[in-house]
Length: 310
Image 1: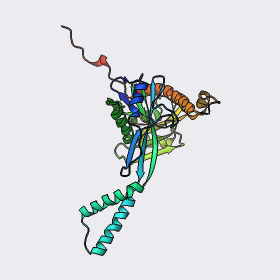
Image 2: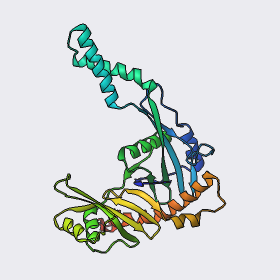
Image 3: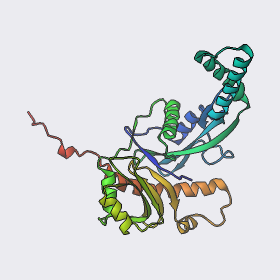
Image 4: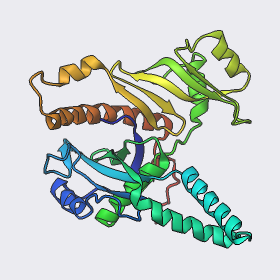
């Protein structure tokens, strides 16, 4: 299921139950792109088109899925068509084409080509953890995640959230781990990382299949580069890339863990997805709690000055 996890905090408790949320999402169901639309987005049943539920519940977690469709019309194709049209006008009418006329030609060509352009669709999962007060979106891309959350906000009327933002220097902590420092309990470093020069963002080194304790990695650290993404394993159950924004990428569950959770007799895809989702939410709840406590702990009320009673 989820290949990524971008986390957002709920500022207020999520009050809709599964039935109420289901009814709201149905009103914003996915509809394909119209003839002159570049993109379209709406909700779809998370466990597949054969199911009747638009929200799937497991414990205190609600699984939803958005479907995003876009028309494939590369800018290079439009540019080529505009250039050909401009050449024809200049040759046949013996005059230059103004910038305003070029813009009008582009719009006309776009309107003509759009209805005939191919479309591509993809499903983007997300889930709401009512108990932990966060939303997880299966996308490493900020723009795509925000589109899903905007659709959810439009569907239910209000969605006060904020992205998970580290409160400590994550790259420094990652670099300390790679240099031999004490790693967060439950995490084990794997064999890939990305290092970047904090002064020159173009100076990037990406390592895969590399012993992170090797002299080569140590030399990069000593030269000033910092680890901005790190391959890790959580309790020998989940592997992923953790970056400096605390986004989880390339999530992979241990094969034996999945085999143990899945009934050998399960042949229905929806039942398998339900089992995978239950497994996913249970593992991510403990993992994300540990990451938040380490990199983005909430402010302590104990540190605020107390007013004297009168």
